[in-house]
Image 1: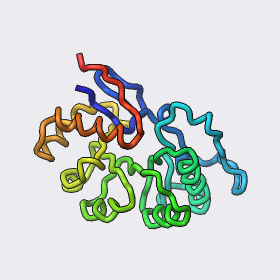
Image 2: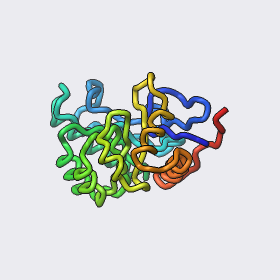
Image 3: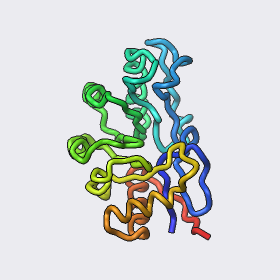
Image 4: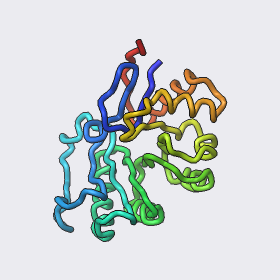
Length: 207
C-alpha cells in the first residue's frame, strides 16, 4: 500500500510518495516576494526548467500577510500564466482572497486544475468551488464535514510542514470520516495523483 502526501516539505519516506514543495513543485509564495522582479519584469521560466515538475506553486494570495496586496496580485497573475503555458496544475495558498483568485483565473481564461492546499473551508464553500476545477488538499486541521463530503476524485491529503504526525495518521482519520477502508482511500489517492499530474506515483511497498 502506497500513501501519497500531496504537499510536504520533506522527502519521501518508506511507503510514501511525497509531493515535495520546492522539488516536485516550485512557485512564488505570497509571504516571500521580496526578491521578485517588479511589474513588467516577472519570472518567465523556460519550458526546459519545468522538467520533472508536477505543478506550479505554492503560489497565491494572502490578505493577512505583510506583502503589499497589489504585488501579490501581480505575481499571482504571472504564476497562473506560467501554469497555463507549461500545462501544469497550480498549488494554491489562499487566505481571504478567493474572489480575487477566481477573478484572475477568469480574466486569464485559466483551464489548468488548481489545488487548494491546506483547505479548511466549509462543505458549502467546497461545493461552490467544485465547478471551477478545484482539488482540495486536507491537512490535519480541517473541517470534518468538508472532508466527508468532498467528491472522491477531488480529494487529496497532505502533511505540509507537520513533522510530528505521519501521513498514515491522516489517512486513518479520513478513512474513518468517510466510512471506507484505508486501502480503498489509498487506491483513490493514487488514481487522483494520476489524474492530476498525468503520471504514475512510484510503487514502493510499506515495510
